[in-house]
Image 1 (cartoon, rainbow, N blue to C red):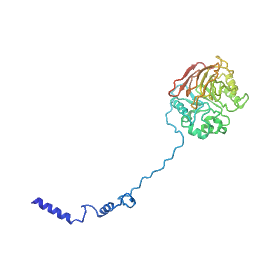
Image 2 (image 1 turned 90 degrees about the vertical axis):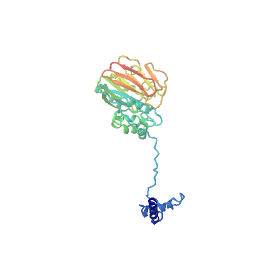
Image 3 (image 1 turned 120 degrees about the vertical axis):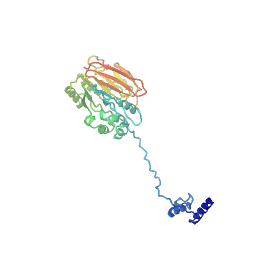
Image 4 (image 1 turned 135 degrees about the vertical axis):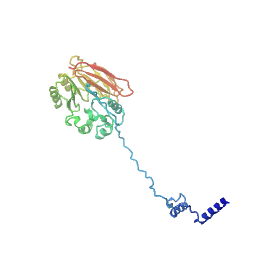
Length: 345
């Protein structure tokens, strides 16, 4: 009987409420609910009210990237305290149409020391854009420790302005392109084989004066065009002969060059290309920076080691009276060449 009375009371209360109203619901909420229920179909959504105004998602157009390499932030190896200095580099390096320079720049990431370039830093014409977009993301990661030399492709831009503007003071006076510096016990000379090298030229006279002012036990010079090469594309050039003679007269020890896109090591020789174990200069052609590969033609008598299919860098450890050399190949290649040259002149 008590249960029946409770049911009758509840029914009476509900019948007293306005039609469809839920206890606790405001009249405004009810109005929104009714409006939503009266909303037309998806065909005319603009007339449908919403409880909360939400901005519709906006799709922002994404700009299409240009063909520009992005440098990878990779820690550079640092030399151990008290170790002898390292000189490492190559020539004929970067191009946006090839990946060889990316492979060789990864070698630099794990080799401490001073980086040198042996000319033709970027293809095809050494423009500012090519330096920024093609050289910068690979070898450019090591720009702060690079001492460059220019090549003929760098001079395809008038006055090699792209080269000089990119490297700044590290490339020397832009009207000359040759300079020297000290590295440990060694005297290092960077020369410019794209301007006059003739006997009596400003560069040749400067070189003789520089060598006289720095009578180091060990001396190394580098530039782009090799005096000696067994390469089939360019071969030997007689133009650097006066520079070779000046270095030989000063008892220099090592010359590095590029231009021929391969690797070649020569026995110590005199400026005429004759073997000379007493005062001869050892020359390396290291045009293996990444652009492409050239083959070999007639092999010169003093050529000791050659390779025409491996990108890589030459690493020199400069001891006070000698040096170690090692050709370091790109990942996936097995060719290497290493040894020790005992005793500077």
